[in-house]
Length: 112
Length: 114
Picture 1 (cartoon, rainbow over the protein chains, first blue to last red):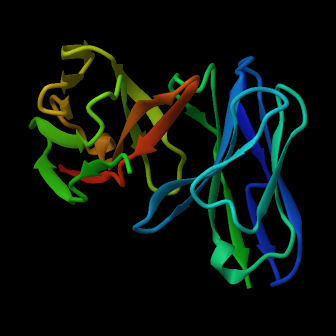
Picture 2: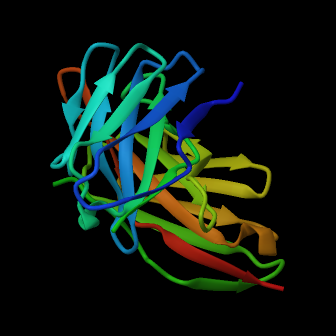
């Protein structure tokens, strides 16, 4: 089992460009999450999906949109990238929202 | 605001020593507690889960939970240089209905010196 996979691993964007980060899990988990991690700020929740068909805002949702495509896949979209969105993005999944989370390898995004 | 606090470190221990990592949390109703290890440039990796008061051992790792004092700790025995990483404490709190929230501390950087 691959666990949680993310693509791409690295990305450089120019201000104003858009892109979609992809995440997939093969653990039959119900809940999926998107975090960003910045130095000194810890992990911050952007959006989450408690179950297929639902999505909710986390702590820092501005500038992002998400799609829970099916039970396996959860994508994060940046419509108009800004330098403040330079970060490492992690996708995670859990069996239920009350369970431990398992993380993907991350995407390093730089916005110039 | 439910908070999870950790000393940012760095905590430096010699090889073979016991490393002790501490975490306090603000929500008395918290019910699930996790320790993650994160190597530099890598993603968080779950290493321990604990749900009830007392100690839970797994190899060289022991998690300790004291709900009355609202702290959870991680002991690493016979520390190795490969244990050098940032350790994240995470706590699940019940928010009402079917809602739960997982809150991460900012992590403690551990350095094990050969």
